[in-house]
Image 1 (cartoon, rainbow, N blue to C red):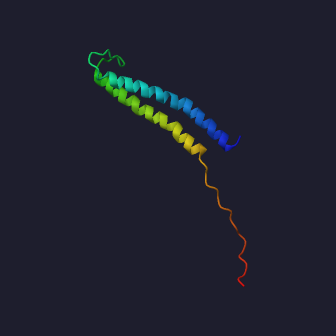
Image 2: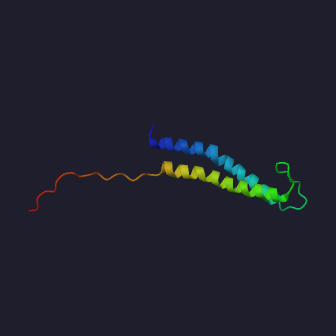
Image 3: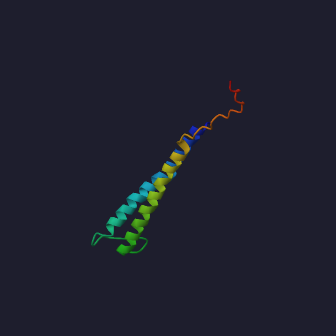
Length: 98
C-alpha cells in the first residue's frame, strides 16, 4: 500500500469518526442556541430549563462541531499533499575551465 492510499484511508476514517459527529454537533448547537431566544419554549438541557444553559450548551456544541469538522480537513491536507522532492545531489567535480 503506497502513501497515497494510506492518506485516502486516513481521510475517510477521519471524516467518518470526526466529520459526521461534528456536523451533528453543529446542528444540535444551532437548534439549542436558537431555542434559547424563543420565549415560552420548552427547554430541557440536562435537567435545567434555564435559557442561559441552552445558550451555553449551543455555543459549546457549535465550537466543538467546528473543531471536529476541521480535523478531517487538516488530515486530508497533510496526508494528500505533494511533498517537495529532494534535489538530486551531484557530487561530481566540475570539468576544468578551458
